[in-house]
Length: 190
Image: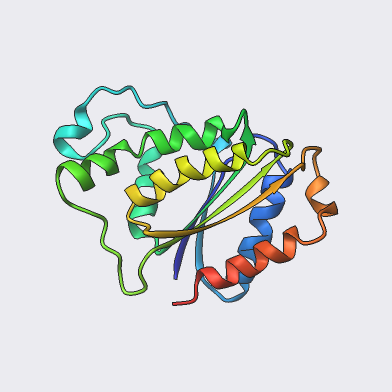
C-alpha cells in the first residue's frame, strides 16, 4: 500500500517526529511503500490566491509542492503529523494545505476527484501540543478534515496529546507511542 506522511514540525527529533516515527514503524515493518515529507525542509511558497487553479485545477507556482501533488494523487493512506501552535496546525502544514486549493478546484469546480483506488483512501492525524484545552485539537482537526476531504480521503482518525510541550516529553506519556503504533497498524486494514 502507498502511504504518504507529512511531518509538520520545525523541531527535529521532537514530539511530532517521535509520534510519526512510532506510527510509521509497523507500516515499514509490513513492507508498505512510504514517502515521508519533512515540510520544514521543503521549499513551499504560500498560496497567492491568484485564481489560476480555478480554471485548470493546477497550481502555477513552481516549487516542492509538485512532488507533494504527485504523492497525494498516488497515495492510498495519508498521515499528517503536526504540533499545535496558537490553536492550529503549524505554519509548515498550513502552507502545504493551503496549496491544496488546486485539488479543491479540481474536485469541486471541475468535478474530478482523485480516484479512491482498490483499497480506498484513509487518513491519520497526529497532534501534540503544550496546551491542555481541547480547542487546539478541535481547530486543528477541523482544518485537517477540510484537507483530507479535499484530497478524497473520506475518513481519518485523529490522535491528540495535550499538555506535552518540552522536546522529548511525549516519551513520558504513558500510552502515546503504543496508541500511534496501533493507529498505524489499523490504518492499512481494508
